[in-house]
Length: 549
Image (cartoon, rainbow, N blue to C red; front, side, top):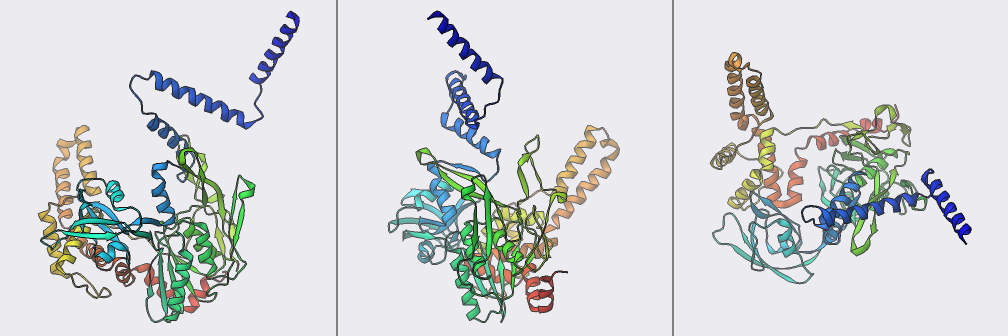
């Protein structure tokens, strides 16, 4: 018995030595090992850390840190955040159908969706919410106010609002409904033959909405089409396929997904008969066009079905899926990369190879691969979609950006519409010089101030001169520079008058007629749209772009 025991102990020790000096073949060993380390570490911290710790917060930080090391699109969604996630991905919820926000410490209606309860009850952009069902909401975070406004469909909610221009507050009883946010923000004719569609999202029904808008515009005489995907962050992949299907024949590949799990790899093709395979199309793109927007724009470019006008797109070639976790939580995880018909993946950042400091680099130009469109035009992977016609970006002045971010543009638009309740003709609407002066005087009464980058750099220069003990010699020059910078700043209201007026007019148009009003005004002034109209009217130039050089 003793000798047998010794042999067993020796054999066990041998196995231990082998395990210690060899790499485990099973990858799940590393998973189990590290999960065990994490669990024991957490128990020790929870038991012995000098202060009390919140287990929930501590674990959440650990989860977030782990997922952040992968990519920005892989997220943990706990049960309490699930409703918000569903609203974002489906565009559906039960409530009054209005966006709210905080403008200068006031909770206001920022967008009552057309033909939904808030809109039909008469709520307007800029109305300040005072109470919901008798609960005072001033000073409360928008998340709390939003929770009070939402509820089961067909239930009533009482809202008390304060509207500029009215002496007394308004109390409205509104019946909640199931809200489905529209994807097409606006569709209309730009002239006798060019139709325009502004697509803001890819939630369920996006394909049908674009199809219906296209059919309607054709009935109104549209012989050419502009599809605006600028600032569209994407959404559901199958809706992107449905939109491409409107303009290319049945049975054509639109996008394929390839990832670690082979059985999830899939190629999406057009399944239905198209609406129109001949109508000339311009797709507007920009830095905010991502994901599903890039699939639509990229597929139409690869089939030489549309000309892309604008700026390079975001460059998101990754696909996410949701996985159910315990306790009703979910994981949104990147499962694949997508490839458009030419074979290219337009993912710009390589998250699989991070730098030592955790940053991620763009795909180097030397590593980009050339692909060909159906007609043989050259296109490239690894950096978003390059437009066929590039439009240089326009940057807002510092003063204009400060007026927008500070809520001053929004508030004055609310004031203006309260004083001018009759909606003007938005196609020709402009602010008078007297009204602009009135706006500037209103800002001065509010003691509006802002800092320019040049002003900040001048201050840094003066501080550096003092630290280096050169200020005594340079004081006159530095103070003169400071005075000139401040003098130039005082003239900003004159220098940027046209720009500020246009931004204010856009906001006023939105106050009056929401997306439609803003689009009507924008389409008469937008340089990218103007360039697209010129291209569509020049048939020869349009065809030349789609022909290999």
